[in-house]
Image (cartoon, rainbow over the protein chains, first blue to last red):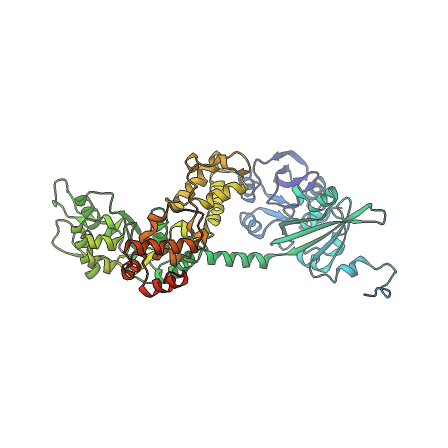
Amino acid sequence: MNEKLLITIWRDQVAPRFDLTSEVLVATVDSTGEVLHSKTVVLPNVSAEDLCHMILTEGITTLICGGIEEEYFQYLTWKKVKVIDSVIGPYDQALEFARGDRLEPGAILK
Amino acid sequence: MDFSSFPKESVKVEEVIDCIPVGVAVLDTNLRLQAINRALEAMTGFSREEAIGVGCYHIIRNNLCTQQCPAKQALESDRAVHLEGNIINRERQKIPVMIHASVIRNDEGQPLGVIETIEDISLLRELDKKTQTTYDFGDLVGHSPKMQKLLEILPIISQTDSSVLITGETGTGKDLIASVIHRVSPRAKGPFIKINCGALPETLLESELFGHTRGAFTGAVRDKPGRFQLADGGTLYLTEIGDLPLTLQVKLLTFLDDKEIIPLGGTRSARADVRLIAATHRDLQAMVRQGNFREDLLFRLNVVRLEVPPLREREGDIRLLMEYFLNKFNRQFQKKIRGFSPEVIEILRRYPYPGNVRELSNMVEYATNVCHETMIKSEHLPDYLEGQLDEPLQTEIGVTGDEMDSYTGLEKERRVADNRLNWREMERRMISEALLKSRGNRTKAAKLLGWGRSTLWRKMKQHNLV
């Protein structure tokens, strides 16, 4: 079954703050870990609420981000979105690790 | 002080910064962490081993990091930077912080990096919230002594079922106070019904207030409950009670006595569990003297009397309200106006506000709409303000609210008085005028001034008029 990942990004890094993210990478990955489709989206407004709304309407299954407040973490988890937070490092590496199902919360990808 | 014994050999940075009770981070010029202390480890949830060599924005996760990085600002501006923001730690908690960033230099003055202190100010912010709540009762804003007195008594009277009479000039916020009393009262879950006694003709008002039965008048095809019945279990707010016709005053009196109402055209009374709040800008005592308002009704309504002070008597509140309305309209119109120019502050502070808070709100709303800059300037204010600022606020010359009250009788005549007089001279002049008018009769003069005879005598002595 395909997975839809969303990574919050800032420059070439995973964005340090979920609530201040203005750009995201959305990638569809198949069961073998191959990226079928990916796109970066620049968000018109910077807001954790808008981002949560987008995650749910886009049908995202996994969120990869930096710091996220407990409130939004719990909400997304409740909505069955897997949240891998406190990820540090370049977002392409984060995607690489996520494809292989090797990305853990708090991962530091130096 | 003798520093001769101070160790000359190099010491480990961590050992030094660990002694500091606030979070400390040492960064290189590429903004990568070189050292953090124990306090910062505890605050962020990242260990020293994890943090070293990582970009500071990943560890500190301040809301300013991506837009206004304090370390970057310090390096670029060559001065210490102090900014307030918030961080999100590994436990997913948002913590308000104060950040100070300073550049570290070598002996040649070359920048080696930046030292940042990150201070947790969550306790301070909580304290701010508590302090604000003492000033702020819902939407009621004010910290002048008169408003504080009012705000202190509101929670107490809202817990009772006593009738409340709110008096005050137009635009002072009587409606707001009535709704606040209802909101914080045990009746808050019940309805809050407002009716303007001056807005409807007598017969219609009677039907609106008390309801009517089928066939009570032409067109009354079915029973209709009145506002009293609709407000059952809640609060009925009668605004402009001074405009209530005498015949309806009797009916209202009956309700206040028996808690029962008889609908128009009906024969049976109905009980209504209603708390009554009335408001007026009129002087009900004067209306009683003129025979336009029933004295017994006034006594029954006057169980709790709240006098809302006019804005000109609310020392210091004008500035507070200006900021309050600016924030409100900034949000409403999605503007980013930061404040008022000193000239505007002075103009608005000196204006006498015959329309009170409502007028100030309208002025700020107008200015927020018109202003396309980051600061409201005098040209953004309504045109009618020009030429109306000759009279200074009387409170500016040191009159306390209580003293102001007792002079109401002569106040209007004095409005055009020489504004260069200070209060002492003004008081002396008022006493002389009152004595002249009363032809030297001190009892009459004291009455004119709204004082007791002994007060007049004491003040005359102070001014060497005896």
